[in-house]
Amino acid sequence: MVGMGCGSWRWALAVFLIGWAGVSAGDVTFFAWSDQHVTADGDARHLEAVLAEMSRLPGREWPEAIGGKVNRPEFVLGCGDCTDWPTRRAVAAYADATERLPAPAFDVMGES
Image (cartoon, rainbow, N blue to C red; front, side):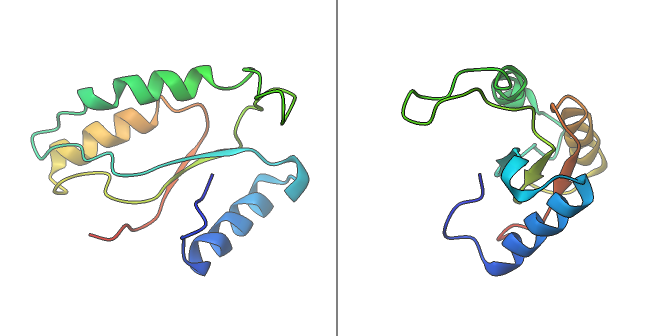
């Protein structure tokens, strides 16, 4: 979920992506992540746990107060800082990681 502190451009992007996915706002599920920080040498091993967890989320029960199950996401929003430095190895490792996400990935610029 995009946090409340995000700028209006991030909300505009989310609305655009919802329209692109062809679903109504009441039906959309998306995941978001940030600060993946794949190292300049292409080391992305620290992402293994989050990739596995995101793949396991769809179908899990929400807390009783919410009810229902987590839907499969329409997309995964990357909110920046995907690499420490955009070397070829880092970018390739990040691209490989995004291929393992449970939905298409869309990245936006972060704070650095």
